[in-house]
Amino acid sequence: RLEKAELIDGPIINRYRELAEQHQLWISLDGFHQRSDDGTRLLNSHLIINYQGDIIGRYSKIHLFYVQPAYLVVRESDFTQPG
Image 1 (cartoon, one colour):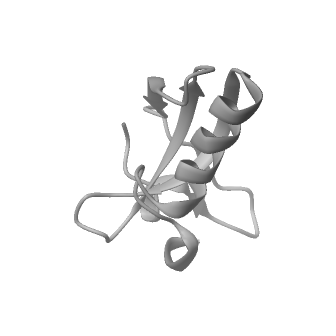
Image 2: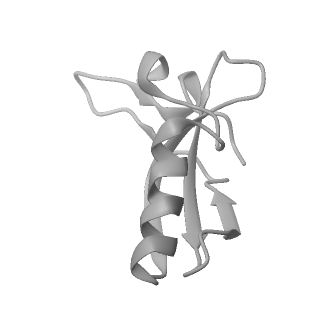
């Protein structure tokens, strides 16, 4: 995931911003894997893009999950930075 993550001003989000403006749409984009500023982890972010292509809201997940059934341990904090 980290190698595919990008900054908030990267090409994927910029393309969504262009589409919002071009088609006069509001876009609610959930689960965007945003690269952390230091580039070592992800932020699981939700963006709101208005019809003018502006990012008017951003939320990065704060509470990260931790699952430990008998056969597996999954800690979201191993690869995701809390917002």
